[in-house]
Image (cartoon, rainbow, N blue to C red; front, side, top):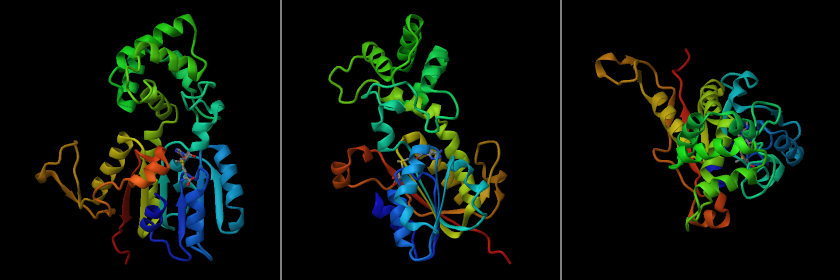
Length: 305
Ligand SMILES: C[S@@+](CC[C@H](N)C(=O)[O-])C[C@H]1O[C@@H](n2cnc3c(N)ncnc32)[C@H](O)[C@@H]1O
């Protein structure tokens, strides 16, 4: 959704844009071209290999870029407050991550059961499946993966690891396939479990929640926040955040009772009421983007007098 992203960011020469998920820097390169000659880009990615790839691709823009390895949830700790004209978050995994067996993201390629975007931080997927209780694993498979057979698969995993702890992606994929045979379904039975594990290993929902808060700090009045999600749980987090921050009141206790509303100035304006989805032509060209959803918000502030 490159054209939609560039359009949503309302790019002009000289704009300062942050890209919290650089990946292979395809979006970043187009953003820098559209903000020539003096636009700036602050970019980060948790994945060291992605940062290296981005540095190589963006080398022609030296002097206009600042790139770091890190979590976009921490952008506000190194990008100045109210300095950016736009922020892009293109969530999920990149093709190089999925296609590298040694990263352990894919059940289609055998490799270590790893899945950390930043290999220096946190638990691997193997540690998670070898130590989590059946209840914990079932909760995770259901809440993050929407896996209807979550309990059954979790019980099978706990049983299988007593014989032999999980070390590889194939070992886990085969255990799941034995417990829940494919039976003519198109998707591999391990799809949802792998996605849930990846999201848990990388605390993707936690990063998103912190990253959206950080966005409010670094964006100027009128700046655009553009988020692409690939997962219904993430999309709901973005949608709920936008709605809550676009209201001109707050309420406490989790229930919106008109008498208990506290007025306050909205922090965002919703630009896309409904999520924008890729066109059929784009899906045909790149099937991995089929579940992408794009949402756009604009930062609004009370005028500072
Ligand atoms: C879909 S790819 C981005 C592709 C990129 N927009 C491009 O044009 O090539 C997602 C990237 O986000 C990174 N990522 C995911 N969660 C992150 C986080 N919390 N902080 C920083 N990077 C993250 C991944 O490592 C991956 O490289």
